Figure 1 (cartoon, rainbow, N blue to C red):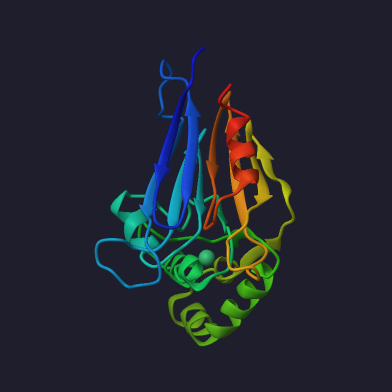
Figure 2: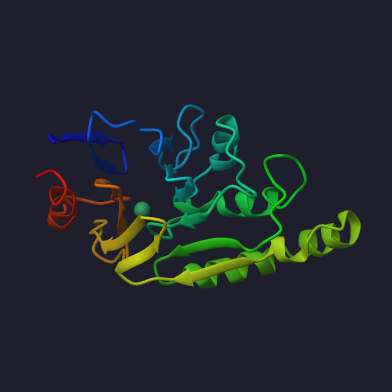
Length: 222
Ligand SMILES: [Zn+2]
C-alpha cells in the first residue's frame, strides 16, 4: 500500500509521519498542543505534542500552557495520561511539568490522579522530578492533610532512559534516538519514533540538520 509522507515544520521541531490513507486515523492521532519557543506569546504555547495511539495517550514535552491545551481538548491529564516523555530538559520544554503533576492530582475531571505520574526522558529527568516534588512539598503536604488527596498521586515515577526502545506494550513501540540540538554542548537530546500497526511518527524535539533523524524517518517511507 502506498504511503504518504507528512511533514510538519515548526520553529523548534520537525515531525514526520507516515500513514496509509485508506485507514482511519482514529487509533493514531497526533496533536500539536504547542509549538512555541521561550518568549511568552499568547498565540503559541510551549512545546507539547500529544499522541493518542491504540487507546493510550502520550505527551511529548510539557511546555508552558500544556494543561490548558490538553483540557481544551478534554484530555483528562490526571488519570488519562499514560506517559509524559521528554526530548530534553531545556526549560521551555519542561515548564509545564509541575502544572500537569499537581493540577492533575487535584479534584475535577481533568485531575484525580491517584497513582504516580509516569515520566521518562534523557539523563537528568529523574533528578528533575525528585527536585520538583521537593519544591512543592508545602502544597503536597497541605493538600494531603486538608483535602485528603491520595499521597501516591503526588509522586512521580521518573526514569532516565538511554537511546533504544523506551516503551513497548499493546502493539505500541516508542524508540528514543539522539539528535543534534545545535550549540555544541547541549546533550543529550532525544527524538522519538512511535510505531503502531504499520504506521509510524517521528518527533525530533529541537535540532539542527540531522542525518540521524532523516534515517529514522526514511525507514517508514518505503
Ligand atoms: Zn532546546
